[in-house]
Image 1 (tube, rainbow, N blue to C red):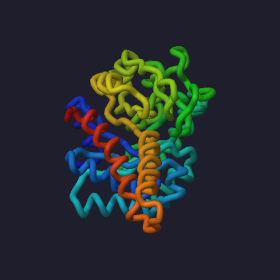
Image 2: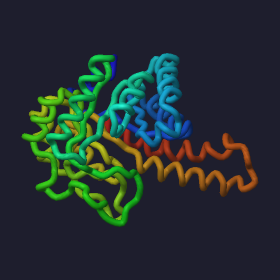
Image 3: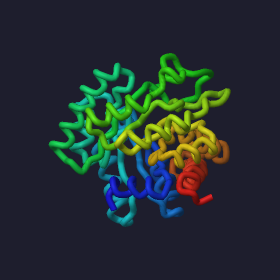
Length: 287
C-alpha cells in the first residue's frame, strides 16, 4: 500500500498514523524499531532545519532502503518547508510527502503560494502527497514558559470550517494542517486543550485528510477524541528531543570515560522508543 492508501485506511478505522521527526540515526533507529515491533505504519519527518543537518538526499535514501529491505510501510515527509525551492529539493530527493507551511500569512496569500507548490509537485510527481497549513501554531519544538507570541490559540484565531473548505478547494492539497488549539512545543505549565468540535466540523467537510501538528504535550484524552473526530496523522517532535537528551545524559553518566558513541547512544534509543511506542499504541488503538 502507498501512503495515500494507508492514510485512507487510517481514516476508515478511526486510527491515526504517527509522524515523528528525526535529525540523526538514533531517532530513526528508535522510531523504525518501535513501528516494526507494533507492526504499524509510520511517517518520518524532517523540517528544513533537520533536513539541512542530516541531508535531504541521504535521508530519502535511508527511508527507501528501510522500506524496501524490510517491506515495511515507512514513509518520509518534508515537514514545514517554507519555500518552493526547498520543496523542489525534497521532491527531487524522493520524499513521499511535502508540507508547504505558509500558515503565518493571510489566507489569500497562503492559498496563492500553496497553489504554486501544488501545481509544481503535481507536474513533477503526482504520487507525492502535498500538505498545506492554515493558521499559525508556532515554529519551535522546545519547552516554553508560556504560549509563544503570535500563535493562534484564541477561538477567534483558530481555523474555521469555511476557511478549511475554501483552502482545500482553491489549493488542491491532499492534506490539511489546521490550527485547532494545538501548538508546536511544550508549555511547562500545560498545553491548551484541543477544540474537538472544531476538528470534527473540519474533518467532515474540508475535502482533505486532516493532520494534527504539535502533538507533544497534548493529553491522551484529546488525542483519542481528535482521532475519533477524524484526524488521520499526528506529529510528535518535542517529546522525542527531550527523550534523546535524557538518554544521552544517562549514557554519559553510566559510562563517564566512554568515547565510543555506539556504546553511549543505546540509552537515547531506548528513551525515544518509550515515547514512540506509547504514542503508536495510543494512535492505533493498541492499548
